[in-house]
Length: 271
Image (cartoon, rainbow, N blue to C red):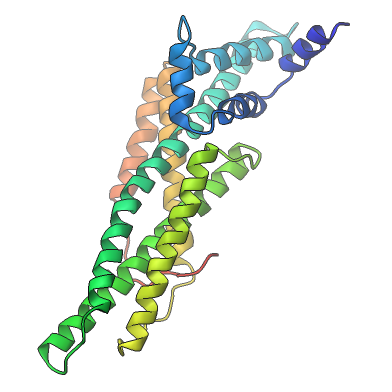
């Protein structure tokens, strides 16, 4: 058997997760999502990776079920398509939502850094001006810690999803992952400065931390990654009714108010 035939035989036995991971390795070689997409558009005709993955999933399922009853083959093909398309959509959603988060955090971090610099330049007085200074410093401390926790929750959610659906393989393109790590460090530095400044100026200590707050937020973010990806995959496979049900349940869950205090404390440190 030639090498090409051996490789082809191996490809026929790849699971949906393995198919997506093989594609992801190829895509990650471009470093970032934008140059990868540009490389696809530059080909004539443009290449749609999902189309390729779908064909491979169908071929693999039919090969594995050769000789079985048609209804069993059809069920296996449908299952393989669902799992493959879902994982593809999940990878894309992880990257897009992370890039959106980073765009927001860059602006928010710059805003907090400038506000903190202004507060550090003030000399708090003994009366109204001093009280205003302390209130603003306490607010800056609280909000910077909240933003750090949002980044930590995002990372925890992403790791959980990768472990469950991608065999622990990183979904983020390398450049996006590096940008995330850099932003987390920057946000942590701003928050640490705010905490230290508040201590020096006599702001009351932060309330006791809720050890489960970050995990709860991470759980919400897991749903924000997984449920829309499931819905999108089913919609692309022509299962609109089920896709709509999943999307509706996800939106309904997000709109259900949680009984939590407005200033609920959150963890400042990595879990």
